[in-house]
Figure (cartoon, rainbow, N blue to C red):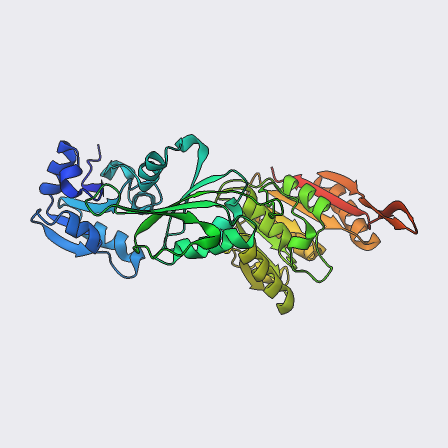
Length: 400
Protein backbone atom coordinates (compact mmCIF):
# COMPACT_ATOMS: atom_id res chain seq x y z
CA UNK A 1 0.00 0.00 0.00
CA UNK A 2 1.25 3.49 -0.90
CA UNK A 3 2.21 5.49 2.17
CA UNK A 4 1.75 9.29 2.28
CA UNK A 5 5.08 11.12 2.28
CA UNK A 6 3.79 14.58 1.39
CA UNK A 7 1.70 16.74 3.74
CA UNK A 8 -0.18 19.77 2.44
CA UNK A 9 -1.03 21.92 5.43
CA UNK A 10 -3.42 24.84 5.62
CA UNK A 11 -2.26 27.57 7.97
CA UNK A 12 -4.01 30.72 9.17
CA UNK A 13 -2.97 34.12 10.49
CA UNK A 14 -2.60 32.61 13.98
CA UNK A 15 0.31 30.58 12.64
CA UNK A 16 1.50 27.27 13.95
CA UNK A 17 -0.23 27.88 17.30
CA UNK A 18 -3.58 27.67 15.51
CA UNK A 19 -2.96 24.21 14.08
CA UNK A 20 -4.51 21.08 15.53
CA UNK A 21 -1.98 19.18 17.69
CA UNK A 22 -1.56 16.34 15.20
CA UNK A 23 -1.04 18.77 12.31
CA UNK A 24 1.40 20.84 14.33
CA UNK A 25 3.41 17.70 15.05
CA UNK A 26 3.61 16.99 11.30
CA UNK A 27 4.96 20.48 10.60
CA UNK A 28 7.44 20.36 13.45
CA UNK A 29 8.77 17.00 12.24
CA UNK A 30 9.21 18.15 8.64
CA UNK A 31 12.62 17.99 7.00
CA UNK A 32 11.59 20.30 4.16
CA UNK A 33 8.92 23.04 4.17
CA UNK A 34 7.76 24.69 0.94
CA UNK A 35 5.64 27.84 0.88
CA UNK A 36 5.49 31.57 0.31
CA UNK A 37 7.23 34.16 2.47
CA UNK A 38 4.02 34.64 4.44
CA UNK A 39 3.74 30.95 5.22
CA UNK A 40 7.35 30.72 6.35
CA UNK A 41 6.85 33.73 8.64
CA UNK A 42 3.82 32.03 10.19
CA UNK A 43 5.85 28.91 10.99
CA UNK A 44 9.31 30.38 11.66
CA UNK A 45 9.70 28.55 15.00
CA UNK A 46 10.06 25.26 13.12
CA UNK A 47 13.59 24.23 12.16
CA UNK A 48 13.51 22.68 8.70
CA UNK A 49 15.02 23.28 5.30
CA UNK A 50 13.00 26.08 3.72
CA UNK A 51 12.10 26.35 0.02
CA UNK A 52 10.16 29.15 -1.67
CA UNK A 53 7.56 28.59 -4.37
CA UNK A 54 9.52 27.72 -7.52
CA UNK A 55 9.43 29.93 -10.60
CA UNK A 56 7.70 29.12 -12.84
CA UNK A 57 5.10 27.76 -10.47
CA UNK A 58 4.54 24.65 -12.64
CA UNK A 59 8.03 23.53 -11.56
CA UNK A 60 6.54 22.81 -8.11
CA UNK A 61 5.66 19.23 -9.03
CA UNK A 62 9.20 18.42 -10.18
CA UNK A 63 10.53 20.01 -7.00
CA UNK A 64 8.23 17.90 -4.84
CA UNK A 65 9.01 14.66 -6.66
CA UNK A 66 12.73 15.33 -6.23
CA UNK A 67 12.14 15.39 -2.45
CA UNK A 68 10.29 12.09 -2.26
CA UNK A 69 11.65 9.99 0.58
CA UNK A 70 11.95 12.96 2.93
CA UNK A 71 9.35 14.39 5.29
CA UNK A 72 7.92 17.17 3.13
CA UNK A 73 5.33 19.79 4.10
CA UNK A 74 3.72 22.28 1.72
CA UNK A 75 2.15 25.24 3.51
CA UNK A 76 -0.91 26.91 2.01
CA UNK A 77 -3.42 29.45 3.25
CA UNK A 78 -6.65 28.11 4.77
CA UNK A 79 -8.08 25.06 3.04
CA UNK A 80 -5.46 23.83 0.53
CA UNK A 81 -8.12 22.14 -1.61
CA UNK A 82 -10.33 25.23 -2.01
CA UNK A 83 -8.94 27.49 -4.76
CA UNK A 84 -5.45 26.63 -3.58
CA UNK A 85 -2.31 24.69 -4.38
CA UNK A 86 -3.59 21.35 -3.06
CA UNK A 87 -5.71 20.64 -6.12
CA UNK A 88 -2.79 21.33 -8.47
CA UNK A 89 -0.58 18.92 -6.51
CA UNK A 90 -3.27 16.25 -6.37
CA UNK A 91 -3.64 16.25 -10.16
CA UNK A 92 0.02 15.35 -10.63
CA UNK A 93 0.91 13.20 -7.62
CA UNK A 94 -1.00 10.10 -6.54
CA UNK A 95 -3.46 11.31 -3.87
CA UNK A 96 -2.62 8.21 -1.84
CA UNK A 97 0.84 9.73 -1.31
CA UNK A 98 -0.59 12.97 0.09
CA UNK A 99 -2.21 13.89 3.40
CA UNK A 100 -4.18 17.14 3.44
CA UNK A 101 -4.61 19.16 6.64
CA UNK A 102 -7.29 21.82 6.06
CA UNK A 103 -7.60 24.98 8.11
CA UNK A 104 -10.59 27.33 8.13
CA UNK A 105 -10.74 29.02 4.74
CA UNK A 106 -11.03 32.74 4.06
CA UNK A 107 -14.52 32.01 2.69
CA UNK A 108 -15.62 30.50 6.00
CA UNK A 109 -14.04 33.24 8.09
CA UNK A 110 -15.51 36.06 5.98
CA UNK A 111 -18.96 34.45 5.91
CA UNK A 112 -18.87 34.02 9.68
CA UNK A 113 -17.95 37.66 10.19
CA UNK A 114 -20.74 38.75 7.84
CA UNK A 115 -23.25 36.36 9.43
CA UNK A 116 -23.91 34.74 6.04
CA UNK A 117 -24.86 31.12 5.44
CA UNK A 118 -22.28 29.61 3.11
CA UNK A 119 -25.05 27.66 1.37
CA UNK A 120 -26.36 31.02 0.10
CA UNK A 121 -23.01 32.50 -0.98
CA UNK A 122 -21.10 32.33 -4.27
CA UNK A 123 -17.41 31.72 -3.53
CA UNK A 124 -15.04 33.08 -6.18
CA UNK A 125 -11.36 33.71 -6.67
CA UNK A 126 -9.67 36.30 -8.82
CA UNK A 127 -6.32 35.69 -7.13
CA UNK A 128 -3.85 35.47 -10.00
CA UNK A 129 -6.77 35.37 -12.46
CA UNK A 130 -8.62 37.96 -14.54
CA UNK A 131 -10.74 40.11 -12.24
CA UNK A 132 -13.43 40.32 -14.95
CA UNK A 133 -14.41 36.73 -14.13
CA UNK A 134 -16.60 37.99 -11.29
CA UNK A 135 -18.82 40.05 -13.63
CA UNK A 136 -20.85 36.97 -14.58
CA UNK A 137 -21.94 36.66 -10.92
CA UNK A 138 -23.31 40.18 -10.48
CA UNK A 139 -26.99 39.49 -9.80
CA UNK A 140 -29.67 41.19 -7.66
CA UNK A 141 -29.57 40.02 -4.02
CA UNK A 142 -26.51 37.83 -4.69
CA UNK A 143 -23.88 37.53 -1.96
CA UNK A 144 -20.30 37.03 -3.10
CA UNK A 145 -17.13 36.20 -1.19
CA UNK A 146 -14.08 36.80 -3.36
CA UNK A 147 -10.41 35.99 -2.87
CA UNK A 148 -8.74 39.03 -4.41
CA UNK A 149 -5.53 39.47 -6.34
CA UNK A 150 -4.16 42.63 -4.69
CA UNK A 151 -4.84 45.93 -2.96
CA UNK A 152 -6.38 47.41 -6.10
CA UNK A 153 -8.88 44.60 -6.73
CA UNK A 154 -11.77 45.83 -4.51
CA UNK A 155 -11.74 49.17 -6.36
CA UNK A 156 -11.85 47.37 -9.71
CA UNK A 157 -14.81 45.29 -8.58
CA UNK A 158 -16.52 48.41 -7.21
CA UNK A 159 -16.22 49.92 -10.68
CA UNK A 160 -17.68 46.82 -12.35
CA UNK A 161 -20.64 46.93 -9.98
CA UNK A 162 -21.25 50.66 -10.44
CA UNK A 163 -21.05 50.50 -14.24
CA UNK A 164 -23.77 47.84 -14.26
CA UNK A 165 -26.17 49.67 -11.97
CA UNK A 166 -25.13 47.98 -8.74
CA UNK A 167 -23.46 51.01 -7.16
CA UNK A 168 -25.45 50.64 -3.93
CA UNK A 169 -23.94 47.20 -3.34
CA UNK A 170 -22.39 46.84 0.11
CA UNK A 171 -18.72 45.87 0.12
CA UNK A 172 -16.58 44.67 3.02
CA UNK A 173 -12.87 43.91 2.81
CA UNK A 174 -11.20 41.72 5.45
CA UNK A 175 -7.46 41.38 5.91
CA UNK A 176 -5.37 39.20 8.22
CA UNK A 177 -8.47 37.35 9.44
CA UNK A 178 -7.78 35.40 12.61
CA UNK A 179 -4.57 37.28 13.38
CA UNK A 180 -3.57 40.14 15.64
CA UNK A 181 -3.60 42.58 12.69
CA UNK A 182 -7.11 41.70 11.46
CA UNK A 183 -8.82 44.70 9.85
CA UNK A 184 -12.20 45.41 8.25
CA UNK A 185 -13.19 48.07 5.70
CA UNK A 186 -16.86 48.77 4.82
CA UNK A 187 -18.41 50.88 2.10
CA UNK A 188 -20.60 51.11 -1.01
CA UNK A 189 -19.39 50.25 -4.49
CA UNK A 190 -20.21 53.66 -5.96
CA UNK A 191 -18.20 55.54 -3.32
CA UNK A 192 -15.48 53.00 -2.52
CA UNK A 193 -12.27 54.82 -1.60
CA UNK A 194 -10.51 52.63 0.97
CA UNK A 195 -6.83 51.76 0.71
CA UNK A 196 -6.61 48.13 1.79
CA UNK A 197 -3.79 45.62 2.37
CA UNK A 198 -2.70 43.60 -0.63
CA UNK A 199 -3.75 40.24 0.84
CA UNK A 200 -7.48 40.51 1.41
CA UNK A 201 -10.90 38.90 1.04
CA UNK A 202 -13.90 40.79 -0.29
CA UNK A 203 -17.56 40.26 0.64
CA UNK A 204 -20.18 41.83 -1.64
CA UNK A 205 -23.93 42.06 -1.13
CA UNK A 206 -25.28 42.96 -4.56
CA UNK A 207 -27.96 45.68 -4.58
CA UNK A 208 -29.50 46.55 -7.95
CA UNK A 209 -30.82 49.96 -8.98
CA UNK A 210 -34.13 50.04 -10.91
CA UNK A 211 -32.19 50.49 -14.16
CA UNK A 212 -29.48 47.92 -13.39
CA UNK A 213 -28.28 45.59 -16.13
CA UNK A 214 -29.77 42.14 -15.58
CA UNK A 215 -27.33 39.52 -16.81
CA UNK A 216 -28.60 36.05 -15.86
CA UNK A 217 -26.33 33.10 -16.37
CA UNK A 218 -28.98 31.15 -18.27
CA UNK A 219 -28.54 31.72 -22.04
CA UNK A 220 -30.50 34.38 -23.87
CA UNK A 221 -28.80 37.71 -23.14
CA UNK A 222 -30.15 40.68 -25.08
CA UNK A 223 -28.46 41.26 -28.44
CA UNK A 224 -27.75 44.86 -27.43
CA UNK A 225 -25.32 43.66 -24.74
CA UNK A 226 -22.93 42.47 -27.46
CA UNK A 227 -20.81 44.49 -29.84
CA UNK A 228 -21.62 43.05 -33.27
CA UNK A 229 -21.84 43.94 -36.94
CA UNK A 230 -25.34 42.53 -37.44
CA UNK A 231 -24.12 39.01 -38.19
CA UNK A 232 -24.67 37.09 -34.98
CA UNK A 233 -26.77 34.31 -33.47
CA UNK A 234 -29.74 36.30 -32.19
CA UNK A 235 -31.12 36.12 -28.65
CA UNK A 236 -33.89 33.50 -28.91
CA UNK A 237 -31.99 31.27 -31.35
CA UNK A 238 -28.87 31.62 -29.18
CA UNK A 239 -30.79 30.47 -26.11
CA UNK A 240 -32.00 27.37 -27.97
CA UNK A 241 -28.52 26.75 -29.36
CA UNK A 242 -26.71 26.89 -26.01
CA UNK A 243 -29.40 24.70 -24.43
CA UNK A 244 -28.72 22.00 -27.06
CA UNK A 245 -24.97 22.35 -26.50
CA UNK A 246 -25.58 21.50 -22.81
CA UNK A 247 -22.93 23.53 -20.91
CA UNK A 248 -21.30 21.53 -18.11
CA UNK A 249 -18.70 22.28 -15.47
CA UNK A 250 -15.23 22.50 -17.01
CA UNK A 251 -16.42 21.40 -20.47
CA UNK A 252 -14.80 22.76 -23.65
CA UNK A 253 -16.68 24.25 -26.61
CA UNK A 254 -15.39 24.85 -30.10
CA UNK A 255 -17.32 27.80 -31.56
CA UNK A 256 -16.46 27.56 -35.26
CA UNK A 257 -17.07 30.86 -37.00
CA UNK A 258 -17.48 32.58 -33.64
CA UNK A 259 -18.20 36.07 -35.00
CA UNK A 260 -18.78 38.38 -32.02
CA UNK A 261 -18.50 35.41 -29.64
CA UNK A 262 -22.09 35.44 -28.39
CA UNK A 263 -22.57 31.65 -28.28
CA UNK A 264 -19.15 30.96 -26.73
CA UNK A 265 -19.68 33.67 -24.10
CA UNK A 266 -23.14 32.39 -23.14
CA UNK A 267 -21.73 28.84 -22.92
CA UNK A 268 -18.99 29.97 -20.54
CA UNK A 269 -21.41 31.96 -18.37
CA UNK A 270 -23.82 29.04 -18.07
CA UNK A 271 -21.55 26.59 -16.16
CA UNK A 272 -18.70 27.05 -13.69
CA UNK A 273 -15.28 26.77 -15.34
CA UNK A 274 -16.76 26.06 -18.79
CA UNK A 275 -14.18 26.85 -21.47
CA UNK A 276 -14.47 27.88 -25.10
CA UNK A 277 -12.29 28.32 -28.15
CA UNK A 278 -13.63 30.68 -30.79
CA UNK A 279 -12.33 30.14 -34.33
CA UNK A 280 -12.81 33.21 -36.54
CA UNK A 281 -10.92 34.35 -39.69
CA UNK A 282 -11.83 38.06 -39.43
CA UNK A 283 -9.73 40.23 -37.13
CA UNK A 284 -12.51 42.79 -36.57
CA UNK A 285 -14.88 40.10 -35.33
CA UNK A 286 -12.22 38.56 -33.08
CA UNK A 287 -11.72 42.03 -31.58
CA UNK A 288 -15.45 42.33 -30.92
CA UNK A 289 -15.51 38.87 -29.35
CA UNK A 290 -12.59 39.75 -27.06
CA UNK A 291 -14.29 42.98 -25.97
CA UNK A 292 -17.59 41.18 -25.35
CA UNK A 293 -15.84 38.48 -23.32
CA UNK A 294 -14.32 41.07 -20.99
CA UNK A 295 -17.57 43.03 -20.61
CA UNK A 296 -19.67 39.95 -19.84
CA UNK A 297 -17.34 38.14 -17.45
CA UNK A 298 -15.67 35.48 -19.61
CA UNK A 299 -12.13 36.86 -20.07
CA UNK A 300 -10.71 33.38 -20.62
CA UNK A 301 -12.42 32.98 -23.99
CA UNK A 302 -9.64 31.81 -26.32
CA UNK A 303 -9.74 33.24 -29.84
CA UNK A 304 -7.95 31.68 -32.80
CA UNK A 305 -7.44 33.16 -36.24
CA UNK A 306 -8.42 30.84 -39.06
CA UNK A 307 -11.19 28.78 -40.60
CA UNK A 308 -12.21 25.15 -40.29
CA UNK A 309 -11.02 22.55 -40.97
CA UNK A 310 -7.39 23.78 -41.03
CA UNK A 311 -7.68 25.82 -37.82
CA UNK A 312 -8.93 22.80 -35.85
CA UNK A 313 -5.69 20.85 -36.13
CA UNK A 314 -3.92 20.36 -32.82
CA UNK A 315 -6.70 21.78 -30.63
CA UNK A 316 -7.79 20.00 -27.45
CA UNK A 317 -10.73 17.69 -28.25
CA UNK A 318 -14.01 19.41 -27.37
CA UNK A 319 -17.07 18.36 -25.40
CA UNK A 320 -19.35 20.43 -27.63
CA UNK A 321 -19.14 22.09 -31.04
CA UNK A 322 -21.17 24.91 -32.57
CA UNK A 323 -21.09 25.35 -36.33
CA UNK A 324 -22.63 28.74 -37.01
CA UNK A 325 -20.63 30.85 -39.41
CA UNK A 326 -18.24 28.01 -40.16
CA UNK A 327 -20.55 25.40 -41.69
CA UNK A 328 -19.15 23.27 -44.51
CA UNK A 329 -18.97 19.51 -45.15
CA UNK A 330 -15.21 19.59 -44.56
CA UNK A 331 -15.60 21.51 -41.32
CA UNK A 332 -18.24 19.09 -40.07
CA UNK A 333 -16.12 16.02 -40.90
CA UNK A 334 -13.10 17.35 -39.03
CA UNK A 335 -15.16 18.59 -36.09
CA UNK A 336 -17.14 15.38 -35.72
CA UNK A 337 -13.95 13.30 -35.73
CA UNK A 338 -12.48 15.44 -32.91
CA UNK A 339 -15.62 15.54 -30.74
CA UNK A 340 -15.41 13.49 -27.55
CA UNK A 341 -17.86 10.62 -26.90
CA UNK A 342 -21.16 12.01 -25.59
CA UNK A 343 -20.17 15.33 -27.12
CA UNK A 344 -22.85 17.61 -28.49
CA UNK A 345 -22.84 19.23 -31.93
CA UNK A 346 -25.21 21.99 -33.05
CA UNK A 347 -25.26 23.56 -36.51
CA UNK A 348 -27.48 26.45 -37.59
CA UNK A 349 -28.35 27.36 -41.18
CA UNK A 350 -30.20 30.35 -42.66
CA UNK A 351 -29.68 29.84 -46.40
CA UNK A 352 -31.35 27.21 -48.58
CA UNK A 353 -27.94 25.83 -49.52
CA UNK A 354 -26.76 25.40 -45.94
CA UNK A 355 -30.16 23.99 -44.96
CA UNK A 356 -29.82 21.38 -47.72
CA UNK A 357 -26.40 20.47 -46.35
CA UNK A 358 -27.87 19.97 -42.87
CA UNK A 359 -30.67 17.80 -44.22
CA UNK A 360 -28.09 15.60 -45.97
CA UNK A 361 -25.97 15.31 -42.83
CA UNK A 362 -29.00 14.49 -40.70
CA UNK A 363 -29.93 11.63 -43.04
CA UNK A 364 -26.45 10.17 -42.64
CA UNK A 365 -25.76 10.83 -38.94
CA UNK A 366 -29.18 11.17 -37.34
CA UNK A 367 -29.98 13.78 -34.76
CA UNK A 368 -32.78 16.32 -34.63
CA UNK A 369 -33.78 18.98 -37.16
CA UNK A 370 -35.78 21.96 -35.94
CA UNK A 371 -37.00 25.08 -37.74
CA UNK A 372 -36.82 28.16 -35.52
CA UNK A 373 -38.85 31.21 -36.46
CA UNK A 374 -38.96 34.38 -34.37
CA UNK A 375 -41.19 37.39 -34.99
CA UNK A 376 -41.05 40.69 -33.15
CA UNK A 377 -43.81 43.24 -32.66
CA UNK A 378 -42.91 46.39 -34.65
CA UNK A 379 -44.77 49.60 -35.55
CA UNK A 380 -46.89 49.45 -38.72
CA UNK A 381 -47.87 53.06 -39.20
CA UNK A 382 -49.81 53.95 -36.06
CA UNK A 383 -50.49 50.29 -35.32
CA UNK A 384 -48.36 47.26 -34.47
CA UNK A 385 -47.63 44.11 -36.43
CA UNK A 386 -45.34 41.10 -36.45
CA UNK A 387 -42.04 41.40 -38.31
CA UNK A 388 -40.44 37.97 -38.84
CA UNK A 389 -36.71 37.35 -38.71
CA UNK A 390 -35.12 34.92 -41.15
CA UNK A 391 -35.97 31.35 -40.15
CA UNK A 392 -33.11 29.22 -38.80
CA UNK A 393 -32.76 25.49 -39.40
CA UNK A 394 -31.03 23.88 -36.44
CA UNK A 395 -29.49 20.43 -36.44
CA UNK A 396 -28.35 18.92 -33.13
CA UNK A 397 -27.02 15.52 -32.17
CA UNK A 398 -25.01 13.69 -29.50
CA UNK A 399 -22.00 11.55 -30.40
CA UNK A 400 -22.55 8.02 -29.16
